[in-house]
Image 1 (cartoon, rainbow, N blue to C red):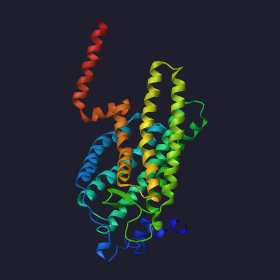
Image 2: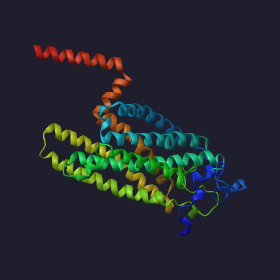
Image 3: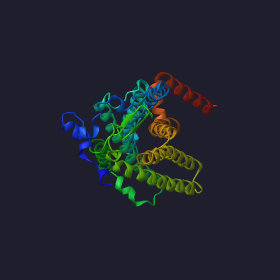
Length: 334
């Protein structure tokens, strides 16, 4: 167990301070080419991850600008959604775009060790930043649905900026000060073990494990409580208010489910050998945890959807709005 203690020598910070050289005690590739991680090309999954990643970016980037330009950005929920969007977009570049390219060409760690380690640090920091931001968003949503929750005061005014700063420190700290994940084309996924013949216990990332376990339990607890509040209050609310709460619940569910699946599976894979199909399911769950957010915004968030429509099809959207307004005016006058 002493080998599983986080080691500064395995971090990206140490690599940068060491002239962008990885510690050879942990990351040096064997001189014997037969003992190095194999180059296995995965063209189908490479195209899948790259193509789906491009689609996710095309959907998410307009949502990102919609959040920035929204008057609701002054609210704690939208400020948290902005930080979540930054982490999600950076995650998409790794778990979809980079994974697709590396998998398509079958690029193992020993071909580009520094590049893959840097991508792995960004991936880890983005994932853990997404986790803390989504959990905080759940707490804010609970406050929105229940006036009895006193912790809402913690997010009022400038206090929310303390949490936003904490998100930044948590994500960047995880990426720079813990062991990065390393891409393995054989399984089309990312592992902490670079598979260069060293003891696998050297690469166990306990902060990541604790984060994932906490993420799984907190999301289920928070969103379970959120569902309870929503259905309890909907019995006494008007139809419009009830519809709004159902939409919030649906958004919360889709934010939660894929984060929880990815958290549990990746924590599991650190300690127990998983079959290839489960590894691939884990990778897709990680991908979906970021990609599903923009789809939720476009389908269930009316404010963001209208803003994106204005950006994407400005002229036709405005023309349609004018026509609908004129028709409603004519019907009222008659």
